[in-house]
Image (cartoon, one colour):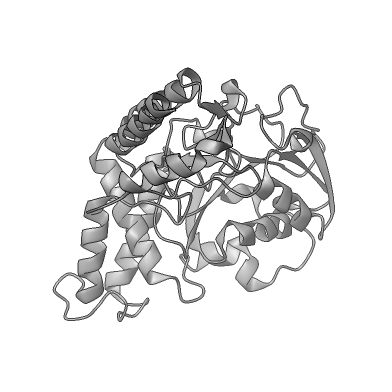
Length: 354
């Protein structure tokens, strides 16, 4: 029996994507070869790469607007370095809203001056700062759209006077936004797009080539663009699965369709958290993430009982991050509404037992 998978990442994938990718590992499209055996220079994989890159731009509504999509390696953590290497000449502004945003700041400071335009670190990142100003003379502004660990999400984005960079690792493709507001978007695949091993980068070409430093080829966005995202041997399997996931999303109606389902899931879980006296949410209500709901038991004496009930209901991956404790329900695109209903039923049942 398939468990209800609330893992924060690597996370749940659509069932049809798992089936198709499993078949391709045995044999890709009647080729007599496994997906894992084909050359990355073969027409079969070049077509996969081109389709994946095209789908990413199509789903984000960025085709024909000067953007390029890349599938790279090293995770979002590598992008902390690449963004600074490629864009930071004198000074950059960062919004500090969580652990990964904080890590991005630390990496960028290796190369030059970085200023925190605002931070919620003093409150253990339980809210998104607002009302900050972005200096016009900086090289770029960096933000993190969704904070997986703490369960906060930016509900709106500033009209930045300088190039805006966004780490969307945990909510890419989950909601309608004006993605043309961003000059560079990056996202690790392992939460909303595919398995661990590749990172999507969508970058507007005209922001590149403006720093004076020499950039190692493997870390230069312009090099990866010129080589069609295949400067080095790409991670074939994660890119293929990401392509299948984007095809699945397109088939079901794209971002607009999945956003409605994601909103349903979020309303359901947060309603139970607010109405059930045994639970309390971690983040302030206006900044609650639709992807990661963080909450705690009011009475820790009920933890053993609740954990046993979760296990009996085949609910997996609900433990909160050590920075927050408690529980975290990660509700990425592929998580069915029925899984959230199953979790809410357990939470409600606990109230009757307490």
